[in-house]
Length: 174
Image (cartoon, rainbow, N blue to C red; front, side):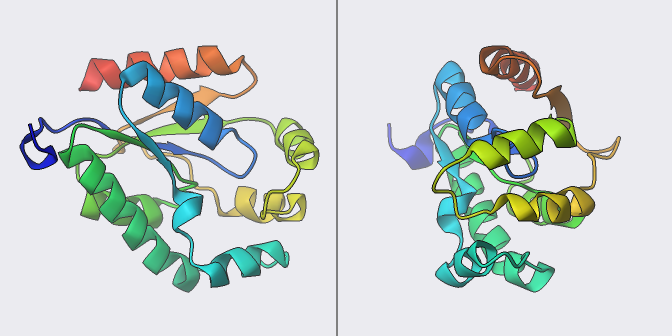
């Protein structure tokens, strides 16, 4: 069966601020669901990566074309059997842009205390996002609205429990 003929699958965005564990949870969740995953960080243009690496937060103009690419990839994945996408999706407008490309998108918001996030960010090696940008991400974060299809999961629990909670929630809706 070709990808174009495959049954539509789940389109899951694992969202949250830097160091919340998006990539790890997305990979684990995708394995549990039996579908691929992708990291939206890989879709950033070089200019965005350089800007963040220099300690400068991205603005909405920087994010717009990146979100268009993320939304297109999410829609492609959903149309060919499903995809889990690790993507910050910090603001409602960003999530709206993703839903405009992929209306079936649902969100798993990884949430945790600033102290835990800062400790994780400080322990990471070789990531382009410096720990100094955590506060700008927390300031930009807009929680899921009651009309948004999503679930909030506490990152203080073990990774397998986070993925199991997300899997149960996604499976109940797809």
